[in-house]
Image 1 (tube, rainbow, N blue to C red):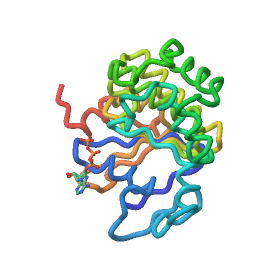
Image 2 (image 1 turned 120 degrees about the vertical axis):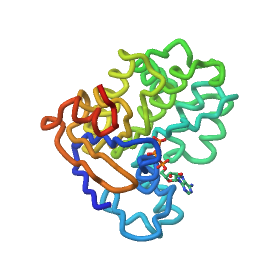
Image 3 (image 1 turned 180 degrees about the vertical axis):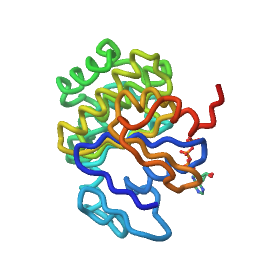
Image 4 (image 1 turned 180 degrees about the horizontal axis):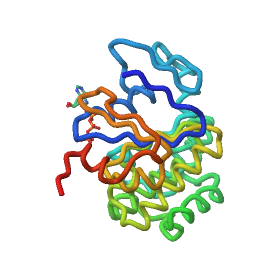
Amino acid sequence: MDLAVAAGERVAVIGASGAGKSTLLGVLNGSVTPTAGSVRVLGTEVAGLRGPALRRLRARTGTMHQHLELIGPLRVVHNVNAGRLGTWSAARALRSLVQPQGLDDVRTALARVDLADRMFQRTDRLSGGQRQRVALARLLVQRPELVLADEPASALDPALADQALQLLGGLAVERGGALITCLHDPALALRHCDRIVGLVDGRVTLDAPTSSLTLAELERFYGVVR
Ligand SMILES: Nc1ncnc2c1ncn2[C@@H]1O[C@H](COP(=O)(O)OP(=O)(O)OP(=O)(O)O)[C@@H](O)[C@H]1O
């Protein structure tokens, strides 16, 4: 794979299940170590980064995981605040578990995903779509430059899916960074991304501006027959 994403781009990564979309995001956030090749993120070579250097890069890179990685028994406020633990001292992080810190930012982020009334609810009492929006609010308080989102709207109804993609794109672009998001919904990719990268067995077989693609072409890429 040879891929360069510029600042300001919103890129949808599409491809059949198992094509390598999540692995690509993992390589970019440093959670998957490539066996060969070179990966530069925000100007930094990822391979070999350790300790504070890796933590600094992770604070600038926000990932919305396919399985969300929320802590179920914790209240929503704590899961949202987890987005900025990388910038807090250990003492502040511990204090926040007893007396949640930075409530104004949390409230604002939750309002942007229509969950303002859920701040103190246990996270595992929420629906799948509500949990997905908690993960999105966590990214909103983190304010990363590079946003990596793995199927960020898979559990959302169409209106909330559009809202989520708008927030993710806006977040990345407002920080001068980029959005790279895996999407199984070609229409969503066409509406919210500038560029579409298609993977087959870990290789890039499609890389084009959204404006040059049609929904029918993307559906054919997924093997949809009408
Ligand atoms: N930790 C791992 N170790 C070894 N192989 C893995 C690991 N994680 C994923 N794979 C394999 O890598 C390939 C790509 O997986 P990946 O999760 O990146 O696919 P994907 O395109 O995101 O799929 P989906 O749309 O189903 O989420 C698959 O064949 C998978 O079995």
